[in-house]
Image (cartoon, rainbow, N blue to C red):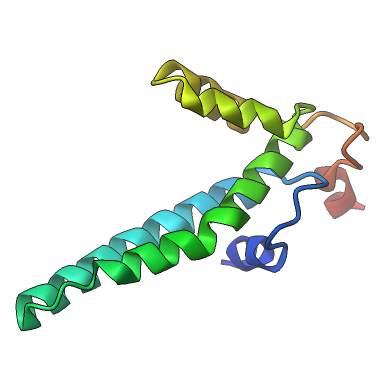
Length: 123
């Protein structure tokens, strides 16, 4: 949960680097919150007939920019520009390539995007 709040604190910070743990824990907690909000919306709809899908859209809009920023920082950590995220616009193949890039290990040492956050954590 620490990583999730760390990403939210860096709401629109597109510079620097993010570790795999920071990125993937953010993705995990986002998924958990999406599922929880969807279930809650369904329960409210079944109980009262009120469509509460707007709750999910508010959450999606609230975490869109931090999610984009942490993905860019994750790509920076592998030594790539954030523009590589545009590969997601290519159906299926683009998303697979981006996922592979996000899973890669950190580039050792300092790169043009800053010092390695993994090495900073161990010092």
